[in-house]
Length: 388
Ligand code: DX5
Ligand code: ZN
Image (cartoon, rainbow, N blue to C red; front, side, top):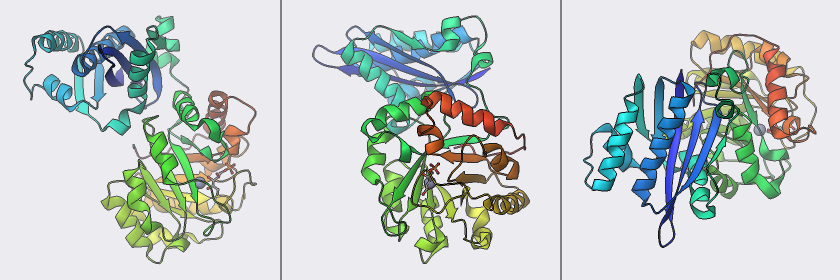
């Protein structure tokens, strides 16, 4: 069994008090366990090593044999890789302990990630250091400690349909918590509907909201720009934390240029097609795209009714994508809910966006995500998607 562990250590105050945060993800990238614990006096680097040690111990208990450890501490990751020397005797001891633990696994890979990708582990570590909370493990799996992790992991839609909740219908007073709940609920992406009041007849929110939420989760941010001249804002959104950026062809004079810009900046490119926009618009640039977003309502508002005629477009697009042989995601957005999710997947969708279907369903976020997943799983079309 293979696990990915995000680790972080924090050191705050004077005298220094430490905390560790670990987020354990299964093979499919779902969070299965979070762990946090306070530490007595610890420097940043010591706290970071303690986080690595706790991560390795947690992983050992699950029976995993292959691990990827991700941390935003370049120094520690390089020391573990053997590319940097460890000078302080205290760190040497922790380093040796960590190496000894890594040898208990068939394979351990250590990688450095940017801080904004390590948001959840970072928050857990900070909370443990500042609030001195007791050691806390949130996991069905580890509390049960009986069966291997995968047997309990959050139910996955076969085969790999992604759920991308749109926060447009969420409670805006508590967006930070909402994002963290989405991650724990097993959402795959978070969808942000940015509206300018010109391309669509509504204004939602912009870059500051995305920037503020970036540190709350490591989930990919799927940013749907419903704005005129998106090329003016693309760099800002990518810098602010967007992993995927969608633009509408009608909003720009130069669709290819806008898509190329997204890719040059290192993000994944998506084109969003309104219900009445012909698919032909994307055909020449399909191989450049990572995602095609098919709108199943006219954009501008959450809570509108799904337009079933869009399913025929999705079927055609599915064929075109399959012909390219590329892992291009086919995302549907607008009026998607548990009643039509299986139709969307049967037509060829690999990513389902839902705002009111999640946040206005009367269910908890976790239940709503799971219900949508299960509904989507009623269709078993085989799709091989993009790993972001
Ligand atoms: C529509 C947006 C959608 C919308 C979905 O303009 O692009 O993402 O928020 O909302 P629901 O799922 O409620 O139709
Ligand atoms: Zn959207």
